[in-house]
Amino acid sequence: MYQLLILIPSTVNTDALDEGWPAFLDAAESMDGLIRESVSRVDRNIFGQNNILRIYSFLFHDKTSFNQALMSSEGEKAGEIIHQITGGEVILLGGTFHEDSLDHIQSWEDIEEGS
View 1 (cartoon, rainbow, N blue to C red):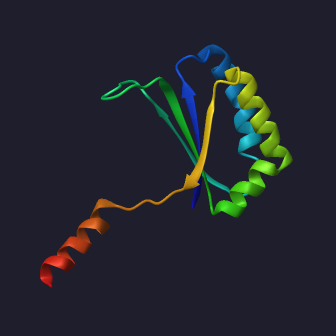
View 2: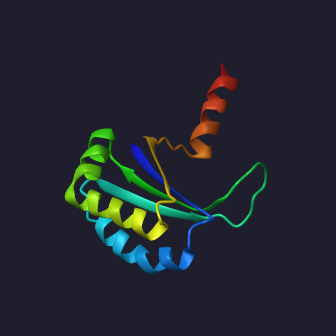
């Protein structure tokens, strides 16, 4: 899978962000290839410098569908909206996404111990 991460710094006007977010979601959720989305609201800095307020994740099947989605009219519209509602203070990242369950990981440990 391929992931779009949207990092919202704490310097962003959250009233403008929250007011414009439904319009952004309407455009973003219309992009072909989008399979899942999530949000993390950062409320605690455990270590290191951090000015991130929210982290949004949008998952796509692969890099090709990611690129096609961003280049589509819906993707371009979503991009314009996110820049507008954040005053351009947004960080957009793209990269591969892998996920595994702890049970699955531990099953490999059981196999290695049995060797």
